Each structure stands twice: as C-alpha cells, then as structure tokens.
Figure 1: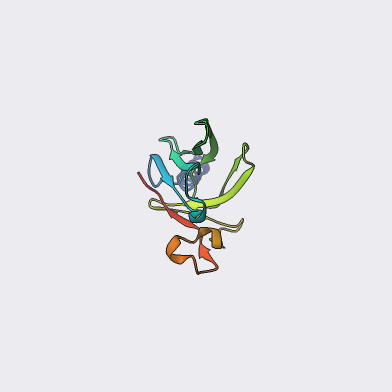
Figure 2 (figure 1 turned 90 degrees about the vertical axis):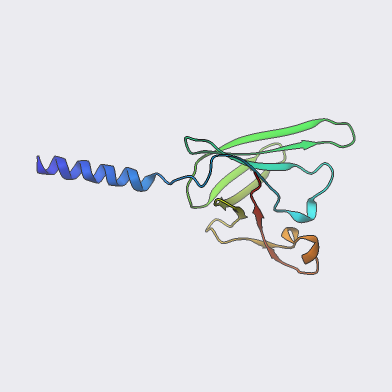
Length: 137
C-alpha cells in the first residue's frame, strides 16, 4: 500500500511539472522582421488555445490583384522551451519562444537571434538587432 501511495504521488508530481501554464489565450499579432514591413507583407499571429495548443499563422493580401494567402499551423502544446514552426507555402522555418508580452526568434538552443532584418527604421544604421517583437492584442 505504501508503494502504491508513493507511485501515485510521483505520477501527480510528474503531471504537474509537465503542464506549463500558458501565458495567455487567444490570438496575438506580431512583427519581428521590421525591414520587410509594407504592402503585401504577411500579417503574422500566434493563437494559444484554452487546451494549450499553439497555432502560428499569417494572412497576406496581394496588393496587385487582391488575392489572399493564409496558413495556420498547429505547433503543439505550449512550453517555455524552443518551439518550431514550418510554413509550407513559403517554406519558412522558425525556432521561437514567447511569453505574455513578447515573441523571440531563437536558435535551436533558445538563444535569441540577431540580424539586421530585425532592426527597426530607427535602428537602421545598426548591423545587428535582437529578433524580438511585441505581441499585440
């Protein structure tokens, strides 16, 4: 009986550590690649479901003919480590992590990437900026 009790406690403890509380639920838009903003640029979003599933997507409207391209990818359950998304239509692959307020492009180890593509107009003379963006409601 004592062994059964310890096994039960171990299972409950493991489950509670395995479940990470999501930082928010709902859809948040973001823009990390500042240098590519403009007409026809995809509007990216992250959508965290109540069950913890994380979806990444975008909507892009071609300014010339009005056609719309969109994609929505389920990248799995939320966790604080590096998550991956692969948009198949444009063959974009990202490693990322996010919290309640910001999203970050990272390498496989979780280190925030730096690139001139992530610099805003005010930082255009800077050769390398951290690839982070604000999550907007």
